[in-house]
Image (cartoon, rainbow, N blue to C red):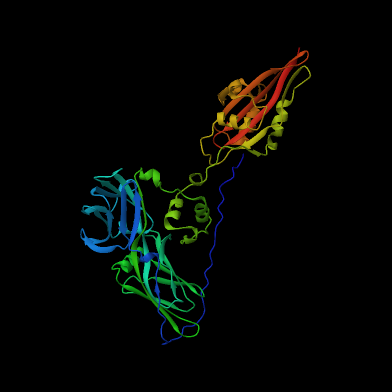
Length: 453
């Protein structure tokens, strides 16, 4: 029985070291810094055809439909006829026209906001009264970002707060930020939504939020976080920043959005990392973002890695006794012979379905002795009885041995026989190719048979 090779994942392991320095009080004057970054941009722009479109990057929270909702407002250079917001295969959030050239997108707190902050892009269909063309779709990305940094320059707060896949029994999402400072301990305080702080090494820390805490942290966006850490010399580094929801990506198309922006598939590297983590792992940040890992959680190896048809040689020496037994009884007057049997494996995850016809074509690509498929006969297990190899004495025993080797089950077959020149005798060369769809194993049997005239 042939065991096919399986997809092997190679994991990446990350080690976390906790610093052992002791904190000291300090009342020394604090450094000041005003950090400019991409997070301070007030608008984000995209153009397609006759439409120029932009969004205010900073969202604001308001009461809508009895719940808190995040509102983003956009502006077009054309009069708007209609707008509609959706994610693939589903209406999502709510887009409204608020003036002739302005719209708003309302994202309700809870499932809608968590989905978009975790990396799901939002599509907004935009129809205009004028212009060529006049039907568009905007792709909007929304993320949590720190900005308005004030304080010590040696206390560095990562602007981005990224979503990662971490099993928690609720939504399996952790929102993670980072801080670099040569100081210990790092404390982070806020009116609401303070993160859990984890030391990584002597000068870096991890900040973790659940969705509920993150929502509290960004609503309202006017409240500041305070960061402080005691340096080795006893002084205290302090800094403040605000955490907000921003439009961080905007694109525009007049084509089919599902073709222009198809949902990505599970990536092979992410699949390998996820499936190579030790049993009991709950945090998969080492493997990619939340959406990247989520796409791989229920994916199979064949969803991820597909290969063109190829034939990889495998050892068929275990079939030698059955071949030798079949060859017995041959004489100088009435002969039959099977040469050593060649065996091959096909890809576990072929890019297109493998058939006996495609196998014959693949053999012909490298074997000049392979006749064109139309010169032979396509058949199945039942039809093998009509071939010389399996229909004569010993044929059933030979097939039983091959079944045991290849795994049994259905067989797709092709057989060929041709008379060849033989002085004062009659001789035929024969080839039979067997393909076992259940195991992907291919066997090629070559031989001849004849008699003395």
